[in-house]
Image: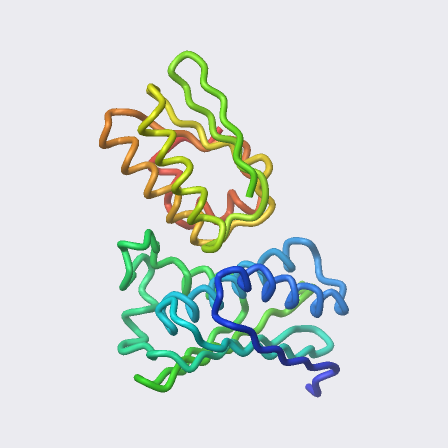
Length: 142
Length: 101
């Protein structure tokens, strides 16, 4: 299926931009007229991915987070990328309730929420190079 | 995020209004923890009727306050979460720890 629209933004790894990123994703997806529940799913997954980039990727230090949104006739593909520390063990990081930062009251639920609320999730990461998360949400699924 | 508080008969109710994410959870956590130290209470009720968005940072906030309240012998409840908040609460297993009313 050919994309029908595309946008790309980048922003500083500041926690205030978590709300900005999920609102941009929801506003762009609105072109496909998703249901409120589908939009809530998308916003939550984007919020988790951006929060991960800020807390884990950049360890709350300055950095740049990139978000690309590609619309297809029936779905949106979201790519969120950081050039932070990378994930040592992706399998471990995606285990529900596993967190490397319990002291920050992280729950280890981020990847579980992304997997549950989106239709696909792909995580690419290299130590010292960064992490790229690609996820897709299909709208109006029968 | 707007926070208002009501205290009645040993019940401390904290009303949250706005979006609860990693960014806003930090100040909410500090405010509630200060209240827990200053206010005599037996039950902490987190009223989420005004919360329009929540991600896993909200779960972390709730679980952290639960541990704190339990450590001083109190109990905790969540009140009035929306449909989408309820889904996240159920997914996290929080509903096994405390009542959702």
